[in-house]
Each structure stands twice: as structure tokens, then as C-alpha cells.
Image 1 (cartoon, one colour):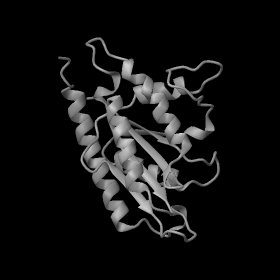
Image 2 (cartoon, rainbow, N blue to C red; image 1 turned 180 degrees about the vertical axis):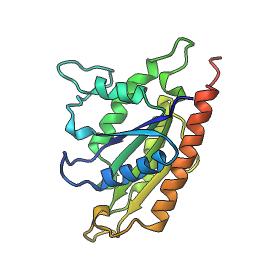
Image 3 (cartoon, rainbow, N blue to C red; image 1 turned 135 degrees about the horizontal axis):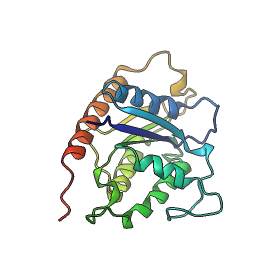
Image 4 (cartoon, one colour; image 1 turned 135 degrees about the vertical axis):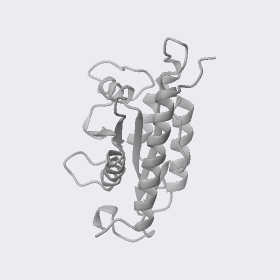
Length: 202
């Protein structure tokens, strides 16, 4: 059986090579997936010229089509966002808007292209909002056709109104590490099931 593939879309507002807590948490999730034999790739979306819109290709140098190809080639999508003013980043919102185009894209049997794919989320920030962001991401990804595994979201919230980032921690908190491991285990299991037994076309 071909190895499963995962791609992480990290929606930090910081372009590379700036350190990113969001990328750190996404990378930890990918490391857990690698432990289950999943081939992984990470993309920091802000490094690419992803145009606003709800089409597959907005033309004029739009970078989304190449990113979309990575998503189509993966079995698992990791969508990672920081928390800003209690919400997902504008970059994450743009990714969801671009994924909206997939609602009209189907395979040869009429199933939406994302029906065979699993999505998980990672949210980080030093303010409240992770649960709301996770819920919004889950709803949008599920609407698009992705399947969400049990406990498919991981997050870290620092103490509100205090300085400090996930990047600043000396060690990964036990609760986060445990959640990352469960998320990866369940995502791999579900992706394997969907690969071997796809959703029925009718």
C-alpha cells in the first residue's frame, strides 16, 4: 500500500524565516504523523502570493493552484493558525475562501474531490479563542468535504494579557504532546480507512 501523505498549511502572519509558534505546533503534528509512516510537507502560506477569491485559479500569478495541487495529492491536511483578536488569522480565512471552490469539484463518480481526505487543525496564541477557531475551521473544512477525526484539533493558549509565545517554552506541555499524538494516530487511522474504503458515490 502506498504511504499516506500529509501537507500542513501554516497560516502564520510572519513570512519565513521569522520564527513562528504556529509553524512549530504544525511541525510537531507532522512529526507525530511521520511516526505512523506518513510522508509530510509543510507550506507557510504567507510566503506565497495567494490571491483573494473563491476560484481554483484567480490568474495573474496566483500561487494557490500549486498549493491546491499539494492538497489534492495529500491524504491528510493540517491547517494551522495563530489567534489574533480572538479569531483565526486572515491567512487562514483566505485558505478557507480558496477551498470554497472545491464545493463544485467532483471525481469521476460525482463525489466532491475532498471526500477522501482527512483534515486536522492546530491553533496557537497567547489569548483566548482556540476553541472558537477550531470550531470555525472544522465547520468550513467539513463543508468542503474533508472528514474530521475524533479529537482532530490541537491547540495551545498562553495566559491572557501576558507576554510569551509557544516558541518561548522550554518544553512541549504534556497536554499538548498527548493531544498531538492522539490527533496523529486518529488521523492516520481514518485516512487509511478512507483510502481503502471510500465514501459511496450514491
